[in-house]
Length: 577
Image (cartoon, rainbow, N blue to C red; front, side, top):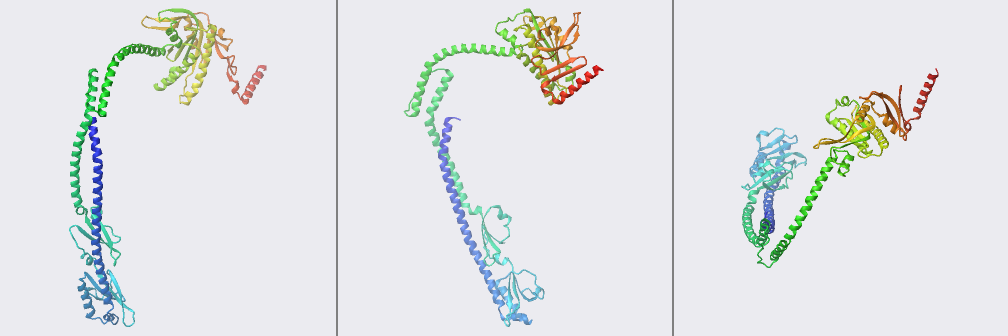
């Protein structure tokens, strides 16, 4: 939305708002005044009508009292009824133009005189609009009852009906007629003084009552439209005067942006704030024109620096990505320049480590691929973290198997490398035992068990492959022997070759196990199983013929100690026999 449009809208809103509010207040006040006047007039007319009805009822009451007090009513006692009572009642009915009948009842409620000839002699059971007792003029005792059956029509016929006013006679408990409940009428009501249980409702059609207001409303809307048009025209002229210089500034700015021609200027023909703005704009363009040359020169220099920085960041990003495919030691040696990326190798004495998951296929055969991926990745991640913690070089992952070696590209000596390798293996076994509990708690009934084989020997280590693609790894018979030792190991055990055992025997308690004949050799190779580290004697493990025992002294209860002692005594007794 342009600033000119916004200015016009703002001017229209500021002008029309008080105008509309004022007109609305006046219209509402006028409507309220008209409604109050209509109600006042209706109430006055209703009061006149109700007073007339009350006067009619008072006249009826007076007539009844007069008739009931006449001497002729003594005939009820003597049962000497004659034409006089009937004539009197008929005369009153005609005088009152009564819709209904008079009845004279004896003390047994039997009709003895009435303007309704057919009811004579019957027990009266009809309506009793008004009933007065008849007392004997001889002894003041009640001789009977004078009552009138007074129809509501006697009153409603007195209503002055017009096209715009509507009277209704309702009981005090009766609801308004449905058509009067719709809200299309102005209503006033008043109860009868003579009959409080009746009320008179006067209704007037709102369309007629507010016809003058409706005409005024149409005039108001016409005036509003004219006012809006007039105000919009004036607002448009004012907006042009205010905004045109600003639009000139905007047009010049866009032209400079499009053409890059900073020689353009805005004409200054006013001395107000907008003229000052135009002058400041011209000064700003002049300053920008002077700075463009310096900015361009500086931009070219910064572009060169940015390109060099981007190239360095790209190389760093690529380096970080490649590091995930290389062992940290290999990665550091390559990027530090210690090793050249060429097809080369060397002969070194290394400690080689192999591990795999026992019966991996059978354990995972019935697992979902997502669960298998989760468990295997967690296992490999945990084992790799331990390997890196001990300074190992992770060579490769072969399915569920891991190949690791110590001694290249960095070494702490053959003995220390071997000790660190076995320590790493013990840490891995311990961590796998912890993971087994977690996996079982997660619902995996067959958690992974691993076996480990370690051998120390000479290997060829270096880059193998082609100039286009190479792999840093180790090869040789020692690698094959380490793999063979691993495949001979029992689940949850660490097997060492004799070469490795001789290097770590002062750091670990080991027991000899079976011998193997490696492929290509004729002499058997003695293997050793790691029991515990000598500096961690809390764990006692024994695995020999006829015995498989693992104890953690800090966890043994007194009852368990007693059971072990009983077993030893039984063994001693058996040997004596």
